[in-house]
Image 1 (cartoon, rainbow, N blue to C red):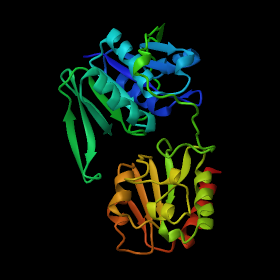
Image 2 (image 1 turned 120 degrees about the horizontal axis):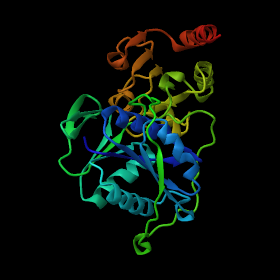
Image 3 (image 1 turned 135 degrees about the vertical axis):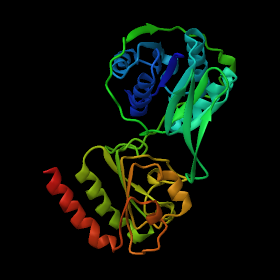
Length: 322
């Protein structure tokens, strides 16, 4: 079994949930699991990775890594990979991961397989399942290069505590500053107590059927009733109308999500939207049009006016949650 190396992403002083997911999956696949964490003042976070299966954690810590800068991070991780010589590299397909992963693969002179939703082993090679044609089909893909590089869609795997050895090693890297052509001066992250849509376990989304921005409060109330792992989303139609910020958009031109539960309220289900949420574990559609395409993808459907359905649904969830 080849060794697996994880890129552990840090944001707002915390390791992203997606990194714990891929670490858990790596542990499940077997073999030695290593992780690399890069940043400034991140050494204290390293032991967290051991809880989810990391046998060894390589820490690249320095002021030059305070903010994510692609070239610097790729150089650092590539040097760790040269030291570890893994057969497989996993990253999380977050916004940062989608930028980092192909650049890393290019540096290592191998291909990368992106946005995978499942992984298995075939001999000493990993085989990835990934959606194609806007989620209409799935392909089983194996990379022929070494190491194999995969980015995993957040929420594809559960986070399981399965302790690894957790040995921590600080690594000093040598950056070629002549290749670093950009400088990140600030990172602006939307202030919200809700989880990012890509990491939320439950998403309540609204579309054109919401009729106006003021009615999204109804969806926020339902999401808050589910608890801190829930958030709201929107279709492109709602965003284009100015009812919600683009940060909430789910779909081909927005965020790709895989929550445990996706509730689509007043969303017709255009192919661009289905491409962004089709891998959700359970899909519930509420729409008064029985011919709406969203019902072809939904596990459960309610053909009715959402304004008659959502408020009592919120009350029922409150009763169940106590």
